[in-house]
Image (cartoon, rainbow, N blue to C red; front, side, top):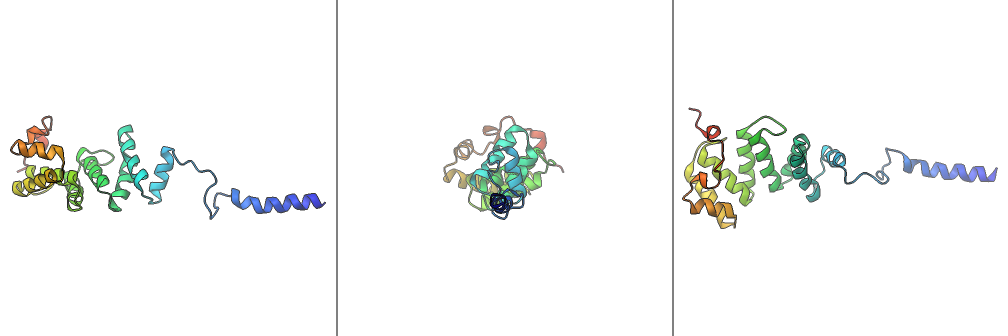
Length: 179
């Protein structure tokens, strides 16, 4: 009888730890699976490792998960994730092709001081793609990115801002004025 009482007491104290709704977390969670990264993103978590997984998701073709990860991280201030959101929107990956949204993400990254964002938004301004065309402002942002050490911006500046020097395979039809 005494051994039954001891076992029952032990089970009563152990069983809450095994429950899914344990307030102290999950015992031995799947930390490095792609689904775990998506689950964490759905809970709104961010962090350097979690944000970097958006790149792997994009390269694997899971653009929906990449978009979820990058959006959370961009909203948390990660400028690299803002750049990736611009890339996803500019190419219609995990959502519709949306040059306006792409330019807005690039603008946010540029204003936060990110050289890639400065370069991308500068090009958008020079082309008038997703934003009103303003070649002078675009060149100024490219200059700022070059001043921040971005090699491709230095190359564009050295080519007298000829966009074919940095995007020779660009779909020119995409950037043609609509009116």
